[in-house]
Each structure stands twice: as structure tokens, then as C-alpha cells.
Image 1 (cartoon, rainbow, N blue to C red):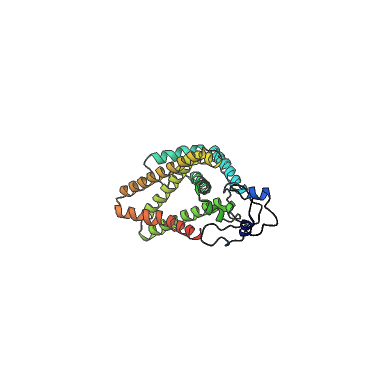
Image 2 (image 1 turned 90 degrees about the horizontal axis):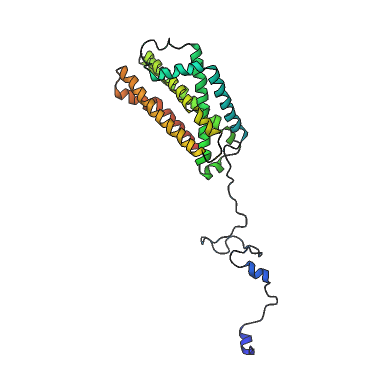
Amino acid sequence: MISPLTYGNIGPLPETFPSVSTTFDSLPGVVSTLPIPPVGVLGTGSGREISAATEFPAVFSLTDNLTYQLLALAILIACCLVIGRYGGEFRVLFKLMSGKIFGGKFTEEYNYFFVNFLNTVSSLGFFMIGMVVVKGLDMYAAPEFRSALPPVVVPFLGPSVAIACILVALFQSAVLRIIGHLTLALQFTRRILFFKKLFFGAVTSLLALPTLLLLLNRSVSQQPIFYFVVLLAALLLLYFIYKTWMLFVEQKVSFLLWFLYLCSVEAMPVCILLLIVRSYV
């Protein structure tokens, strides 16, 4: 029994007692029905601020759009048409790549039909690069990067990368032609351009099947295919460096000029493009 003295020390009793639901809701792990206090009530900087409306950035897939799917399907159809029309040219292409293509009348050994074949395969290769870049960004890019992209821009990422690659290739060709005119070595620069076109056509032919499997795949097996495509592309890049070195050796050109060619003509435009993209991202 509580004495009057003790009752006086505890103060007046509340008019209403908390209900059972309110008491249980205030326990840890139970959603409280009481109103959330405004931000800053518990003190700033304590890590205990409560926000009534927390916004999370929307992360979406870069390949779940109609443009990407139509481009992947168009590349598949184009590859089938090119194989059906230029079957013999593929054999000639790989024979040229496996043999010695830098001696003799190399410009007279391929006709106008073969030039159209190389241009068609190169165009497919540029669009394959754009689609693989989009696929890689969708698989490995940070959520902050993907959420920062405007939804209007996402469908045009693949064509934009392809157009950028085409512009880089045109710039490299123009630089080589200018160097050939200035140094009176136009025949040599033509051989380099011819080899680059052959090499890119061969690379596109070798990577067409795994690239299509990657673009049209949405299962867990897309990661090994992506690694295979990147590894094969890196090995082919090393082979390209070796073949250009052999070309310069056959023409008795010094190692320094070959190194300058790789840095100024091949690497510098790509680095400039990457720096421009990084500045806008």
C-alpha cells in the first residue's frame, strides 16, 4: 500500500495511460504509430536524424529499352546477310591476314567488291563495339553512374559510342594521309591503312559470334562471355601491335618512328576521346 508521502513524491498520475498497441509499437523492430519527429530533433551530426521522406536514386538497366534490342537484332540479321553474300571474301580476308600482305602489288590484289565487303564488316564492327560498351556498363557500372544518366540519353548510348569510334577511325586515317603527303611516304601510309582495314575486318569476323551471344544473353552466363570477348580483343590488340612492328621492320623504319606512330596516331585519339567522355560524366 502506497503511503500519502510516497504518493506525493511521484507527482500527479497521468489522465490517460498508453495503450497496449502504442507500448508494443515503441519496441525495437516494431513500426511505431506515433508521429515521426522532425529532422534535427535528436541533434545534428549524431547519425540519428530521422527523415520523413527518404529518396533513393532509381537504378535502371541500360539494355531494357527498345533501341538496344532493335540494334542487337539488326546486327544479328546483318551478320547473317554478310555471311551469305560475302562468303568467299571471308576466306580471302583470313588468307591475307595469315600470309605476307605487305609485299608486291597489294593495292591491285583486291577489287571494288572486296572493298565494299571490308567497309560493311567495319561498320558492323563499330556498332558491335558500341553495344558491347553499353552491355559492360550495364553489368559493371556503379549504380550512381547509371542513376545519373538521363532516361532520354540511355537508348542512344550504343549508337553514340559507335559514331565516336567511326570519328576516331576517320581522324586516324586523315592523320596518316597527311603524314604520307608531308613525308613523301604515301605508299607506305596506304599500306598501313590497308592493313588496319584488313585487321579490323578480321577482328569483327572473329568476335561476331561471341558478341552476339553476349548482346542477346540475359542469363548468368553473360559474364563469362563478356570476359572471353574482352580477353580475345586484348590478344588481338597485341597481335595488331606485333604486325605493325613487322610492317615497319620490313620497310626498314626505326623503332622510334614505330613507337611515335603508335602513340600519336593510334593511342592519342582514343585517350582524347576518353578524357572528353570523363569530363562530361
